[in-house]
Length: 128
Image (cartoon, rainbow, N blue to C red; front, side, top):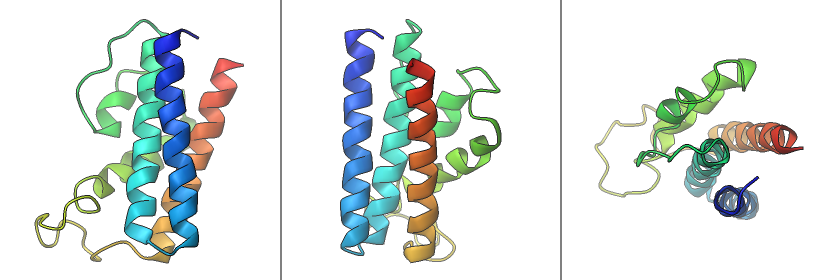
């Protein structure tokens, strides 16, 4: 693992830590945002480890398309679903209805956090 990849993974791990902390505070939209950020940065760390320049995108779907298809297996669908949270959980003036259920609640936060934790575990295994 190169230094640049380590930096991406450090930031990803910090986003996962923040997601856990704000879950305890019941700030569910921020749990979803930081779960998405954790995965985005972890995927960019994987790309950098492969000597790829990560694209300037926040879309997990775009990043997954640059990695080997079988890398995350059945988790891929859940990872791509995190893209739905990036804009509406970050900006109060996001288009109304961009999330069909409004701001995320506990159920969505639980699922987003679980997905980020599973992705983080798989990324860690990749580097061992």
